[in-house]
Image (cartoon, rainbow over all chains, first blue to last red; front, top):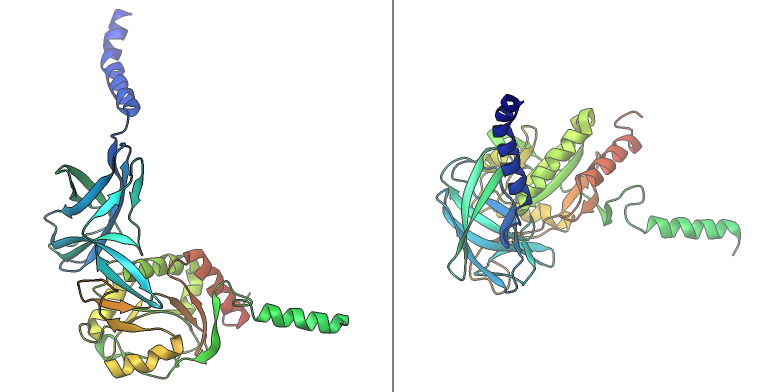
Length: 144
Length: 196
């Protein structure tokens, strides 16, 4: 009996840790569903994510950084009549207990001059910068 | 009003709504696509008027477009996959309207990156401006009002050109792949390009 318990102990510990991780409250400020469109080296592409703000104060995104591209900037696609064009955005605000959703055809992160090809299934690590100086990792999956 | 007149009026009203048999919006007025050769890869040219009996799905954009154009071509890849064997009767054509920066080769490569069967073409300013009006599409240089950066602006619609070369339907950027699949399948059968 005691041998069986000893044998199961590491498994139980792992299970308990997994359970604890699953039950841990989510971070009050977090990035979800980050992805970037696959593209060739030197090309231009876009990344998208959702930034969740569970805090009682607003957040201000001032930019993103990473070593994957010559230039990384916040943009939004804007419609004027039958024309769509892009405008650079210096800051994106997230209301208290709100969320910022970046999707195709709207606000996005523009990556210009990719230093390597991005292929579906790969991961791209970006860093999101907030106006209070804090940073958040943005682990983006590459999609086709 | 007698019954026949009422039915006739109803039919007229229905004909004026959207694309009739289709989920896409009918081009008003229905316009023949212009016969303008647009160069693609390796000296090939494409004219929307010369369909070879195929239905054409078309859009206008530019190859350094990070957001809208890749999303459109990615949607088309889903459309082509869902069409299965029917896709053999559909041309998928991306037209770069960015005559200052794009080349036919670049446009072809950009389209092909999404699917080897996708066709990318470009054209000089004169050719592009001969093609655009029939599609009620526009392109231009410059950012939106208030923008500090100059960019390229383009219409972001999807269009269906039927096998007779008539620009039949258009769709907004937000169109779902299923909608395009449904309309393309329907057109292939209504126009007897595919049996069934």
